[in-house]
Structure formats: C-alpha cells, structure tokens
Image (cartoon, rainbow, N blue to C red; front, side, top):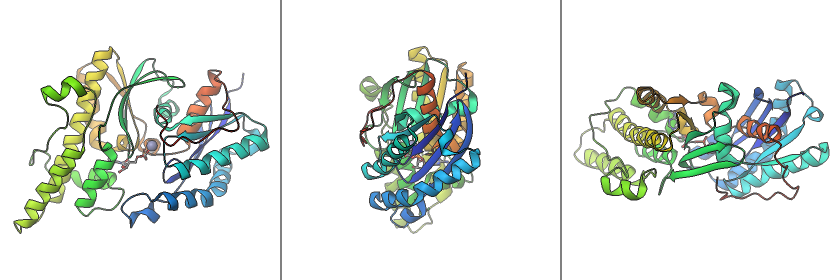
Amino acid sequence: AHEPLVLGIETSCDETGIGIVRGHTLLADAVASSVEEHARFGGVVPEVASRAHLEAMVPTIERACETAGIALTDVDAISVTSGPGLAGALLVGVAAAKSLAIALEKPLYGINHLAAHVAVDQLEHGPLPDPCLALLVSGGHSSILRVDDVTDTVTPLGATIDDAAGEAFDKVARLLGLPFPGGPHIDRVAREGDSVSIDFPRGLTSKRDLERHRFDFSFSGLKTAVARWVEAKAASGEPVPVADVAAAFQEAVVDVLVRKALDAAATEGIEDILIGGGVAANSRLRYVAEERATKLGIRVRVPRPGLCTDNGAMVAALGAEMVARGRRPSPLDLPADSSMPV
Ligand code: KG4
Ligand code: ZN
C-alpha cells in the first residue's frame, strides 16, 4: 500500500506554514513569517497576522508543491490546524483547507496544534513510542502531556497557571532590550553569561505548591523577579549585566521544565520524553534535559529547531497519522476553535 501524501496547513499564529509529507517522510516545509511586521509592536498583532496569512497562502502552497515535486492533484488528504490559536488567523487556514478539500475532492482533517507539535517528531525520529510523555513549551502553551495515541488520546497532566514559557522568554528579552521574539536572543546572549550569578525563583516548586501543582508551571513570578532585579540594578547606576540576567533567567525556566517533566515521567512509569514547541529549540533546555534524563535511564527526543517552531510539516505529519490510523475525516463545515483543548 502506498503511504498517504498529505498537505498540512498551519496558520494559528504568525507563521503561514505549508508542509507536505508522505507517511513519515518530509517532502516540503515552506514557511512564510510575518514576525518582522509584529516586531515593532513587541508581540503578535492578530489583525496583521490574518492579513499576512491571506497574502502568503497561495504562494506558500505553490512553493511547497514545487519543493516536493508534486502537483496539488497528487495529494491524498488535506490537514489544517483548527485550534488552538488566534481566531482570525486560524480561519484563514481553515478556509484555504476547505477550498482545497472541496476542489480536489479529498478528505479534510482538522488538527490540534498542540498534538501536531508532538507528532512532528516522527518525521525526524520515526514512530512515537506509546505511551510517551510530552513537554510542550511554546509562546502560547506550557504543558506536560501523557500521549497514548497522538491522534486521539492525549492527557494533560499539568500546565502553566499564568504565562507560557515562551511568553516569559519574550517578556524578559524585551526588558533586556533584546528584539522580539526574544527566545532565540536570550539563548544566544546567555552563552556569555553566568547562570549562577543571580538566583531567580523556581515557580511552583515549594513543598506546599507541589501538593496542588505538582506538574504545573508558573512563570509570571519569575518575570517579575527579573524585572525588579533589573530595575534595582539600573537605579543603582550600575550597568545591567544582560548576559548574566539572561543566563540566570534561562536556567530558572529550564530547571523547572526539566525537573517536572522527569518527575511526571517517573510517576507515570514512562521512559520516553518528547520536547516540542518553539522553546524546545532552546539549546540549554536540550542540553539539560538530555543530561538529567540519561542519568535516570529516560530517553529524550527533541525535533531539530526548525521543526520545533510553528510549521506546516507538523500539521501534515499528524494528518498522515490520522489517515494511517483510519481516523474519520472532519466535516466540511469544520469550525476554527481558538481555545481548543488538547
Ligand atoms: O511554537 P512557537 O513557534 O509558536 C507558538 O505556538 O507559540 O513558539 C514560539 C515561542 C516564542 O515565545 C519564542 O521566543 C520561543 O518560542 N523560542 C525560544 C527559542 N526559539 C523560539 N525560546 C527559547 N529559546 C529558543 N532558542
Ligand atoms: Zn506552536
């Protein structure tokens, strides 16, 4: 039997992503980003994102087909992120996917963005072990998930109770005068800094917090602590040691993420951890997770950085998995659901 050729569309935030896969083989991953249009606002502006998706959609689809060396009519199924994400941005992708499905007379699969961040790893490291534990860390989400079947059995074990990890990176970067989105800049600057020079708080790790929030995260207190520290330094007239602050902040985030993911894996008796989402591109997170997990006999899978941030390949990957597992296609009146749970 030939493996399904699936075209995936991602428009939940500021990247217009078109991915094409055959089974677990990635054929094309075209991304058009409006991130530069948002940079001067210090965050993603939904209206600007929607318009950019609209303009980028057709050229990005064309580019992906060209790279994959396929015609649109070759495609066996269309998959699209239908949530969670920015409502107006999601709508552009969902409308495009429906049009393609109708014109090509091919099945349509609505995809959960969070599950897609998990499924994408199959393109790089092969089939996901069942069950596995996923640490999903992006600009909009920070969760620990138990994944028994990425197409329909994903159970949240914990999540952030305030800011997402990526959001914390972006806010702290802004405070330090680094460009948006700040994650990659903190990652780079932190390499020159001393991570133990400042002791920033680890959210929800006290004995009392662990009773109620064992696998949950909190990053807003950390962000405030960094802001206070920087203000105090500036008020004293001394220069702010940007690299040290970045390194110490990053260490606080990474420490809690890895600690809780490993604790969850041990508690669930799971030996495979997958890290996904934009923050999974963080070099320190990748290093610390690998180092600590190895000591416990736990395997860590992290997709290459280009597959961690939002892209169409992840949506195509999960679409292909839906086809392979015989999941029912979505109806053609598939709604976009901006607050879709995992
Ligand atoms: O998954 P993603 O591309 O979009 C969402 O679904 O949110 O994640 C974007 C987030 C941003 O907050 C960005 O700053 C962060 O991922 N990010 C990083 C790195 N690369 C991207 N955070 C830390 N270190 C990085 N290297
Ligand atoms: Zn994402």
